[in-house]
Length: 164
Image (spheres, rainbow, N blue to C red):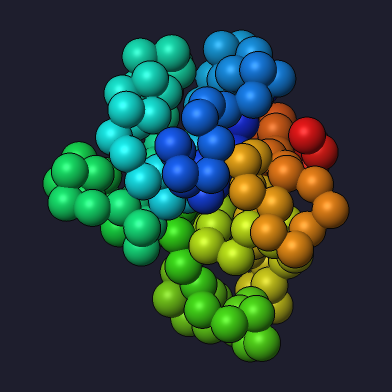
C-alpha cells in the first residue's frame, strides 16, 4: 500500500493571497494525507482543509492567533505507514538545524517544518528527513511559490517539490 501526501506551510491567507492556487487544491483532493506546517493566519483555511482532506496533520505557527492555536498543536505527530512524522512550524536558524532537530525529535523519521518560506530537503546525521515545502502563496526571496507532494511506501519516502 502507498500513501499520497501533500505538504504545505506558510499559506498566510488572506494576507499574502486570497486563496490557495488551483493546482494545490487539486492535489489536496486526491491526497491521502495533507500536512500543513503552520502560519495559516485565518481559521477559514483550517476549516476548508479539514472538509476537503481525507486526513489533515497540522500545527499552528507564529502568525496564528488563539483561534487556530486552540484547535491545532504546536507539534503534530503521526505514523504514516511505517514512518513517524512530526510537524512543527519553526526549527530556528539553518546553521546547526540537523543536529538540533535530532536532539529535539529523537525517534522521528520525517520532520516537516515551515517559517522560512525556503524549500528544504535534507537528512540529519541520525537519518531523519527534514522537509520544508516553502510557501504556495508567498515566495519572499525565492524565485517561485512552492509546495511538496510525497509518496510513502512502507519506510520509503519519495518527495517532489512543485513550483507554482
